[in-house]
Structure formats: C-alpha cells, structure tokens
Length: 131
Image (tube, rainbow, N blue to C red):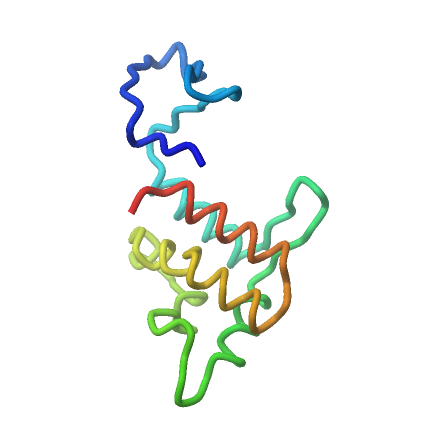
C-alpha cells in the first residue's frame, strides 16, 4: 500500500491533479479532508449514500451495528447511537465523523452484519484520513 505521508509535493489551485512517481495512478490533492468527512457523514445520516456500483448505504446499517454491539463485550467502545443524531454546532466537529467512519466500525460492521460492501467503504474512508 502506498502511504502518501512520505511524498513531498507542492500544488496550486490551478493544478489539483498530481502525478505520482512512486505509483502508476494519479494522486488528487484535497484542500480540507476534515470538511469532506463531515459532509460525507451528514449525507450518510440525512439521505444516505449511493456508491458507484449502485450500493445504497443508509444509517440503518450503523443502527444495526449499535443494536448488535451491546452487552458485556463491545467491539466499538467509542461508537454511540448519538453519532447518528448530531444536530446544530455538533455537526461542525470532525471527531464524531471520524469515529463513525473508522476502521474499527468497519470491522464491527463486517462481523455483526455481514455487509462487506459497507465495511469496505467505511474502511476506505478511514484509510483516506491520516490519524
């Protein structure tokens, strides 16, 4: 896996598509990843997401994880149902969105619901962000 933290690049507003010498694909520069993460969470919670292959992801997937991840042993200690009901100024915080789209949530989603496509998407979002 290519880790972009170790590539030193410069870009301008006119040129957001960057050639990658170390890989055969292109690297896109995004100005504000936390903002995109919050927008992604808001769309997921409010209306759902439709992936390129036609898969529909709605918040019921996460609600199913909340329902099944109860009991003495929890897979996702930070995952709380209130992450899906965030309103007002709380929507401006990136941390709840990062918690919702974490690799831990993806693993729990796969184990508890068996929804592989949703788990892959959540893991992709998590891998996009450098913690």
